[in-house]
Every structure is written in structure tokens, then in C-alpha cells.
Image 1 (cartoon, rainbow, N blue to C red):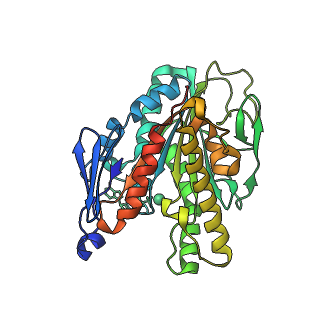
Image 2: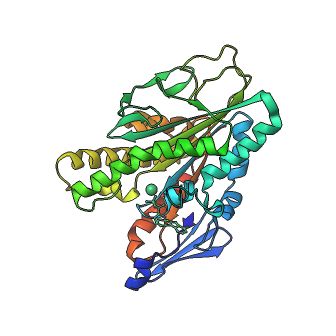
Length: 349
Ligand code: ADP
Ligand code: MG
């Protein structure tokens, strides 16, 4: 769990802090008619630095597991404005010409730095490549392709499970190169945002899922990708291939949003549908193995893409982001309940 600091607006408005970390991985929510304590693997209070979150969340171990060949996933969950993007990426730049302050870099850049360090010590035995996708209106789009966004088919095969066909994958060997990819991918995304906001007079983020994968693999050819296969097949098979996938989910308040109109309502419904599907899969996966029913991954693109990380052979870190403000109480409680359910899911890596 990560609790962000109160924002200036919240402080000015005189919002109460209703969330307190008690140490020991517990978080306490106290407000009129609400008094609840939740336990998690780790809780980061408003004062926690980006570095503390990286070191204390198990992220470094996840990077090592990816290098060892496991499929690892990190997803940020929480309402809009709760700190998901801040936790994953931090601010990408300070200004147009200046990169972000190193202390503010998020889990992604810190993980990439770790991967690059490891890759250097492995010499030519290891290659890194990245791809960058978004799900928008139930369409999977490649954020690295030049040209206007086009939908890529999501397919399934017996050996690989769900995968995105023709997904671009770019090799990278420096932190600058991968940060450039992030900026390139963020561009249309940010524009899309502003556009949607202008149209709807203040509606929140429309982009619904943002995935980022990067796979360490044995040197065997320039382009390979995650999830496995496609785009010029490596001439020799890598001896092992791991993946590290970051997912910035749509605001969780979307789950119950209704009543918008026109095109926005299609978007809202699609976002709604995939977050509902995700919640549904997590609830079913959290049941004891013997009592599990069929898991409906096929209900949305998001759950198909996350199928491996959620219930299969992957290792997953969920960072649930919450605001400490009394104004966000109900959304905070629902995020904490959601995360508690997710915590009961076990996978077999
Ligand atoms: P989300 O992606 O969940 O919608 P953001 O990451 O954009 O939320 O965060 C909303 C605002 O709060 C941003 O201005 C961000 O800089 C700020 N913020 C979020 N988390 C923190 C934090 N831990 N420390 C300082 N500022 C934060
Ligand atoms: Mg965000």
C-alpha cells in the first residue's frame, strides 16, 4: 500500500487525514462511522521516498527473478489522483529540456537501472528489449509505433497463452534510451488526455491501461518480445527469457461510473468493464484452489493480457495507491478491500 501526501488543494480545503500507517505493514482508517485496520506485506506512508518504495516493496527481488527467467508483473491500482503514475514513473521531466530529478524516479526507471547494471555484468550473454502498449476502448494499441494508433490483435496459443500479435519490441542498452521510449509512448497518451478533458469539461483520465514490458533474454537475435514470440524470430533460441511488465491501471473509481454520454460513455463502459472483469478474476482466484471455478480471463482485453501474471506462472506485485484525505474515504476503503482480496491470490511461478 502506498499512501500519498495530502495535496495543496486538500490541505487548503481542510481535509482530515483519515489514513495512518501503524508500522508492521498495517494501515488504519479512522473516520466518523469507520474504524478499520488492514494488514499488507508493506505500507508506505506519505513521507516514504521513491527509493524507500523501490527497496521496501520487493521490486529489486522482482528484477532479479525476471533475470532468472520468471514472468514478473507490477501493477498500480487506485483511484485517479492516488499516485499510481507517480509510483511507477514519477515525473518524466522537470521541464522540456531537463530530465526528472533522480530522487523522484519511479519503480520503472529504478528497475531499468537495475536490469542494465545486471546486463553489463553479464556482458554479451544478456539482451534487453522493451515494448509499450495501451488498452484504449478495448483495443490494444502499440505506443511505440510511429503513425496513428492502430489496434493489434490479441491472440491465444496453447504454448504461450495470450499474446499480442505484431507488437513492436525495441532493444535498449541505456537508461536514456528506455526513458526516451517512455516519453515517446507518453506523448499521444497525454494529448489524448487533454483532449478528453476538454471535451468532457473535467472528466478524468480516459486511458485505461498502460503496460510496459521488458525482457531480459539470452543473446540470440536483435528483436524478440514479451509476451513471447513474434516479430523476426531470433535465429537461435534464447536459453531463457524473463519478463518484467508494468501496468498503470485506470482509476478504480471508474468501476462504478455511469451516466456519461456519447463517445465518452463508450470509453467509460469499456474501462468499467475491464476493471470489473479484473476484480471478478481476482475474487475468484482468491478462493481456495479446490473451490475455484473457471476464471473468466476472456471477459476483457485487460484480463487476457494479465492472465499469466494474475493466476498462472507469474510473480506479481500489486501496489495499491490511496489518498489519506477524508474526501476520498469511500474509494480508499474500496481500494483496501480490493487489495486485501488480491493478497489472497497465490500463483505457482
Ligand atoms: P494517478 O496516476 O493515480 O492518477 P498521479 O500519480 O498522477 O495519480 O498523482 C496525482 C498527483 O499527486 C500528482 O500531482 C503527483 O505528483 C502527486 N503525488 C502522487 N503521489 C505522490 C507522492 N508519494 N509524493 C508526492 N506527490 C505525489
Ligand atoms: Mg496516472
